[in-house]
Amino acid sequence: MMISKESFSDITTPFYYYDTQLLQDTLDTIKKETAKHPQWSVHYAVKANANSKVLEIIARNGLGADCVSGGEIKAALKAGFPAESIVFAGVGKSDWEIRLGIEAGIFCFNVESLAELEVIEEIASEYGKVVSVELRINPNVGAHTHANITTGLAENKFGIAMESMTDVIRKAKEMSHVKVIGLHFHIGSQILVMDDFKALCSRINNLQESLEKEGITFDNINVGGGLGISYDNPDAEPIPDFQSYFGTYEENLKLRESQTLHFELGRAVVGQCGTLVSRVLYVKQGSHKQFAILDAGMTDLIRPALYQAVHQIENLSSKEACETYDVVGPICESSDVFAKNIELNKCHRGDLIAIRSAGAYGEVMSSTYNCRPLPKAYFSEES
Ligand code: PLP
Image (tube, helix red, strand yellow):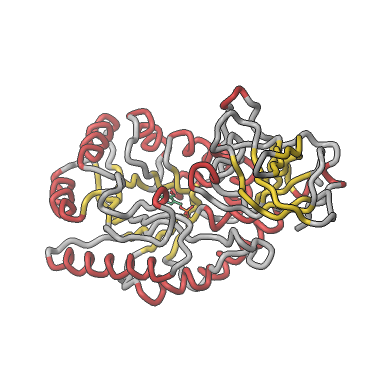
């Protein structure tokens, strides 16, 4: 890792550090792996990291944007993503967000219920426009990941149930201000088992075949995102296995000749380029444990508290023999724990601590709980 304690000695902690070269290398890999498929289109899932500089770099590289709120649409447009490259998902779009999408001229709305479709029809009619929509289908396909980031099971709130799909398509056909241009799916996040994506492909193949029998065809298939990263070994695997990921779709999805295939990758694009840098405030001996108490907490990186996520943690300031610590934050919550019983080079007050693989769902989820300031962000090209 390029971070050194010298480069950060004067900076107030905690802060996010982004390796822009790694982000560029990751984007280059995505472009290389998709180059032979002109009918493929990769949208960056803004929810993973909406830092303006990160967004600008990704927009410059020609990816589209996948947004889940009006705020994300605004951020994407400001960063330079063309409106025609924006897809807009989310189970609860407010009227102002729908208006914003229509006014901006986004590529499509990924609609998650009949109720939402009816509201879009009504608002689009006020504008006298025909709005493109994809129907987000809940494929009832599981994923080998944490329950809180599984989205494609029948019990999850996302998407239109498969059994309602033809009814919704039929109703959409009767509407004059929406045009169904595709089907959308997203089964979950941090997925490393390619068979999960393979299962999604066979579900889509079956759905397409049965819909075609009823004379229903689409121009677009959107398979969402979900490719995971190596939290265990970020140095050995800095770039996710895009070859296997895209290869799985290439081999298993029966895309019709006229169809465009859309991806919505978030974590895999930005996860490894970000590190949360913090300092040890105190080392405390408990009756059973030794605690390294950091100045970063769950307000800066909530993933361990929210998803029991495990991030690699390194002491950048010490080469002394390792000791066992619970690494915790200063927030008044028992769940404000980054790791339990891990080995770290002996910690002292003031040591710089790196929490790795924090580029996705890190800074973007930070909060001001306990009236704490939000963490700042620095980029490798500045250091
Ligand atoms: N698309 C949709 C609809 C999502 O809900 C998400 C994440 O939750 C993504 C794409 C991005 O997922 P990931 O960051 O795992 O690639």
